[in-house]
Picture 1 (tube, rainbow, N blue to C red):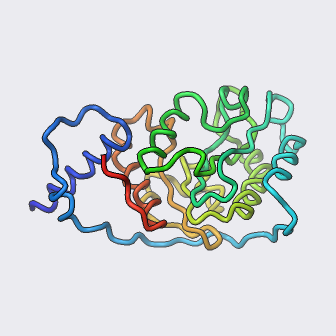
Picture 2 (picture 1 turned 135 degrees about the horizontal axis):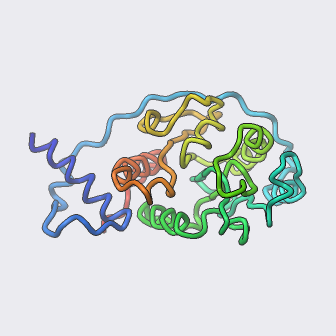
Picture 3 (picture 1 turned 30 degrees about the horizontal axis):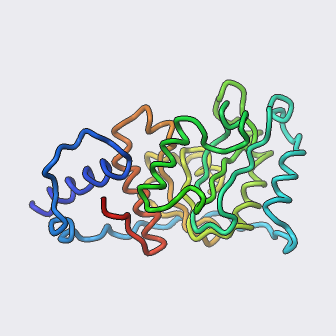
Length: 244
């Protein structure tokens, strides 16, 4: 009973510290209490389709240049700029979102604005800097009015994401929202709510789904499970969040 209580309290405390929440009071768990808790049980694994062959001379810069010239769907006519992604080209972790919004379309940088601020806090809570990971989206152009990507747009654009992942060769992928999970696993029936807690296999790379920062901004109750997912991402690398 005590272990169950400590487990629940630990999650709340880590969420508070990791995602910058202020609603948990002082006088919580001690370090010795936290040390008593066992690590989570390993999650099941689901495997993605096989990968295409990427030429050995290809680079992320070449991919970005191809994205900039792309007119494979109608979004090419309405965008201000393309948003291929940014970060470490040899990152251990790649975060994949859905599509650029207005801030991203103007700047060319993925996850700007409030959603980007929250993602930056999530990354910092993991003990990392934004420039130590790679951040991108399924779509590289903004859909009008920030609507969800259409199926034909995903089909036209997802090849660039596959190409980026093959070039970076991360040790773990964290998908943010339903769109990247479905696109990378090739299964439109998947959803984060039911899929989180499962470790997927994307072409030999562990893939861990969690909620999109935009969803977290509207749903406080999702922040606790999201923090658990981020800890699972770190566990793939043999790391734990820094104490705060």
